[in-house]
Amino acid sequence: MGSYLPILCAMRRKKGTLLPLEMSILQCGIDLAVRGAPLFHGFMIAKEIKDREDAKLLTAHGTLYKALDRLQKSGLLESDWEDPLVAAQEGRPRRRFYHVTAAGQAALVQSPHVTPQRVSAERRPGMASA
Amino acid sequence: MSALLWFAIALTRSWTAVYTRGLPRDLRGERREEIDCDLWEHQRLADLEREPVTGTAAAILLRLVLGAPADVIWRLEAGANARSGKGTQQMNETLPMRIGFVAAMLPLALLVVAGVSFMLGNGDWENDIEHWIWRTAFVATPVIGGAGLWRCATQPRLGMALVLLGVGSSAFLMPWMAVVTVPFALAIIAFAIKRSGISLWPFNGPRPSATGSA
Image (cartoon, rainbow over all chains, first blue to last red; front, side):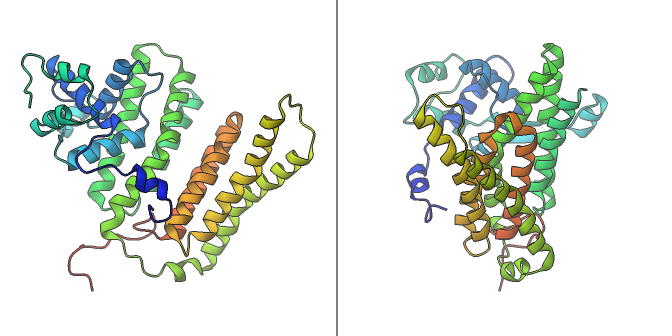
């Protein structure tokens, strides 16, 4: 698409850099882990991002799951599907649980866009830092 | 469940079904299940927080609409490995595809006609610049969308970019008509996806294996 729309070439990021949404996902995932919930599902992280950034809207479905997919492919997140029996017993759809990997934590700290607050949050006791 | 919430959930699930169609079963099932889970959790939280049903429905619709371009891009990427890319030309020459093309062009043509009549009319506008921006947008966006739909068969990427730009913008020009314009826009985008044959589009079967293709 970039060959037709040059602006998309400019928007293409360098390898290894994180988009703001990806940084938010990693940061919120780490914050959840600090609060004792290392596993999160899509809606949970969308809600966490909304609360954290005081946004009016939850992240759009397509944007959120595309970012989660991208982070997983990069090895910054890992995911596991919930046991279908548990979901069936509770009468709800199966959840896909994600967690931030050590590479994800390192990538967040090393990201050139990372803000000082993010770095300090990253260095909270109990969390690995690069 | 209110009718509006039901509609928002049904539309989101339908859209997910459309853009994941033709993907390998695992990938398709996972994305659909994930969206189902998201919708369920969203509804549950809204119930717990006693959020107004209309607010929840609007939030779901907004999440659908704002995420649709990312869905399409994700679909392009996910389908790239199984892309056949052959027979697009032949496929677009079949009668159902021609009928589909005319049917997709009709609402866009109607928008152009409405836009032209809007241009010729004397609206109650205080600001001339705003007046002309709106008038131009009303005519230009469906024209861009139509041009994209036309080009989809021969220049799939350019076509899809124009369709997303034109049809997407048209849907947003009349937010008070979103219940009508958004489903139309999604249907036209889905048809453009099919027409472009860019990669594994909804009605094409996945290639069994990415390796060893002749």
